[in-house]
Length: 248
Ligand code: CA
Image (cartoon, rainbow, N blue to C red; front, side, top):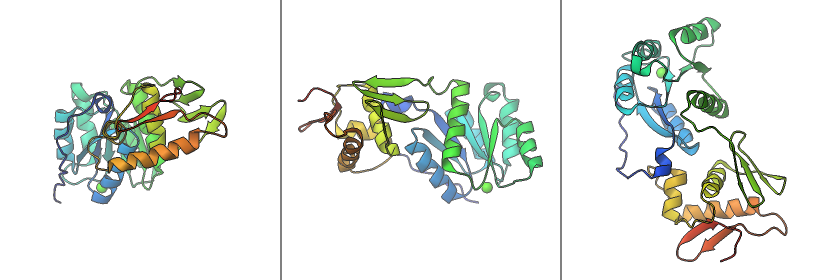
């Protein structure tokens, strides 16, 4: 089995991307690895990869991830063995581990948990369930800030439940629009360029056209501005966007 190394462009992390929890995904199936990376990044995590058990041990020592998503069936060193080694090392004894397993026998689940995995999920799994388990474990370990709510003007964003309300009315947002709004609500009235928004919301490793930002801003506006409500996103000509109730 060949090692799969992804070329990560050397872009300076912004403060907000550094705050994101780092998840190490250990998976030898390239397609699944790509899918997991894509979805974890969309959900606001940073991602490192390892394609086998030995590489996983090295990555853990180098990168100090906040959580390991560990496939059971791996070449070189099995997931169970990697988990054992993680638990044996004083540095990583409490590192949260979720095992990915294709095995459905209860016996195997018990074995995964006995080896020291904090949780396990059986393939094929629902992504939302996986994300919820990752968030729950990270909150328990303290790697994810205690979630509360953000408020600005008549908008409330419930960080734990991922719910948005404006003026008491539920607002339904796609994942990108949600993260855009969350970012804006962390820095109300501040103007961000498209580049800054791309870095903060999509992450520095994702290459998308700055124009993509406009598309998502449009969707966010459409969802959040109801009939007769003021537009709370201010377009600043030649600069970018801000969450701001004051017109320019
Ligand atoms: Ca596998």
